Image (cartoon, rainbow, N blue to C red; front, side, top):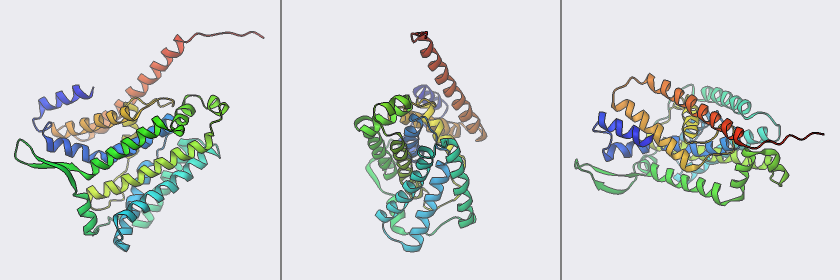
Length: 318
C-alpha cells in the first residue's frame, strides 16, 4: 500500500520524490513516529492511551518554560521533559494496573486534567525566545550532500533521534523479558499471570515508557518548531493510534511490531504529504484518517474471527 500510494503521488507531483521533500517528510513526522512506538507497546498489552497529545503538549510547555527561565543545557532539558513524562506515565499505569480502572477511562481523565491545567498555566500563550544554543541544536544535520537540483541537504538530528528510538523499542520488545511479557499480557493475561508474569509491574513500565518517549518527542518537536504552542497537539492521539493500527497492531492486544508501526507512520506521512502536494483540501485528511482507522480495525476483527473459526473446538460434558 505504501509503495502504491507513493507511485500514485509521484505521478501527480514531481516534487514528491525529491530528496529534500522526503527528508522534510521524515523530519516533520519524527514526533508522530516516536509517540507511535510507545503506543505500540500500549496497544499490544490490550490498552490504549488517549492522553498522548495532552502529555506531549504539557512537556513542550515545561521544556520551553525551563529553557526561557533557567536557560540550562540540552541534557537538563531532556531530563526535565523525560522525568515529567515518566512520572505521568507511572501515575496512569498505577491507576490502570493496581486500581483496575480501564485504560480508556484513566487516560481520558488524564487528558482532561492536563489540558485544563495547561490552559490555566499558559492561558493559550505561545512560548518564544528560546535559547540560541537550543535553536542551533535543532539545525544540526548529518551526511550532507548535494541533490540533483544543486541544493545542499542532510539528515536532520530529529530523524536521527527517531531512528535511535526505533532501535531501542525494537530491542526492548525482541530481546528482553519485559518485551515478552508485553506480548504475553496482550495475548492472554490469565495465562501470563499463571506463568509468573507480574502484570501490574509490566503495565506500569509500559505507560512509563510511553511517558519517556513523550519527553523525547516533546524536545524533538520544540527543536523543529523553535517555539512552543500549547494547542499544537489537539487531536494528535488520533494520528498516533491510526499509525499503529495501520501498521498491523491488533486493537484487542497481543500482536504488533516496531517495523509495522514504522511502516504505518510512513504510510500516514506519505498520505498527508500527498494530499498537500496534490492540493486536496486539508479537511479531507481527517476524513481519510478516520476511514483508514475503521478499515484497519475492521480488517483486524474479521481476520481474528476467521482464525477463531479455524481453531478446533472441544466440548466437555460434566
